[in-house]
Length: 168
Image 1 (spheres, rainbow, N blue to C red):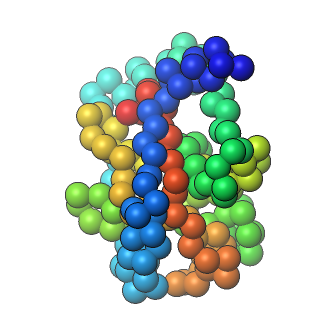
Image 2 (cartoon, rainbow, N blue to C red; image 1 turned 120 degrees about the vertical axis):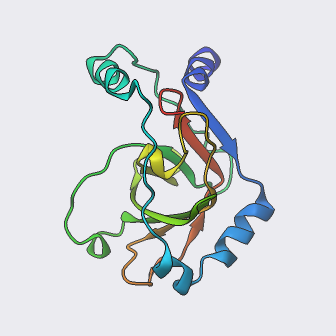
């Protein structure tokens, strides 16, 4: 498995989030701040269309990354795709991610995905990393079944942020 794990690591960028930063993130995201967060505007590189065609044609396929289950309840956030499931507050595995960037506090849709650690969330790449030489978001949390300031399941702080190298 070590060899497959090393190959998977070579196609992603990852950022471990220290415990103090996770605690600060959960304290930061009050209902008022969540209500004021706005969707980010994705940065698109000049050659984005060609890269997007390459990704969908399979020219940039990668090995899936295995997330270790050794850590207690980590929240690993990986860039993925969005799906339309109707009212997200009625589906407990769908929610919102809240995060901070140099341009302010942001919000995006996200969902829990089946994973060995049972704590992995998928969201769009621009909700995780600025791309094109930028950096990872800060104060990153997931609010499952978020609905107008409420998340009956609480707010989970990310322990690791993972984005594909194509996006980064």
